Length: 161
Image: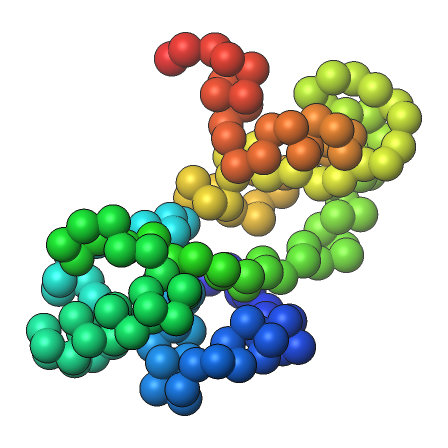
């Protein structure tokens, strides 16, 4: 909660140029729901109705139209995967990044390398409920950060809980 996202407006315009204004609005609301929930899969008739603030017939119609336009993949009754989402999470504040580098030094917390490039990584991924608090951030070399992705450290290292 409280995370902010930005949209590359040129990319958004290119991806949604074929949609009517109504469908573009419906797709935007779905994208917002995807990023709020951390999952590209939306399920349940009531979920779609609450996202679009409409009744059953209108929600079904919007879903079918978005599927026909290639923006969602229908997986079953009231079960769809949102495609082509590209809302980007806003970058960490420069002061927080500087604090993490000062605290951890220029050493990867995961593999111990001192060779750049480095990133600031979320130990518990934002997509899984992690926060931007400094306690949840660490220095990671780019290869480790890319490899870890949105997994927990235990999942990434293959440790069973």
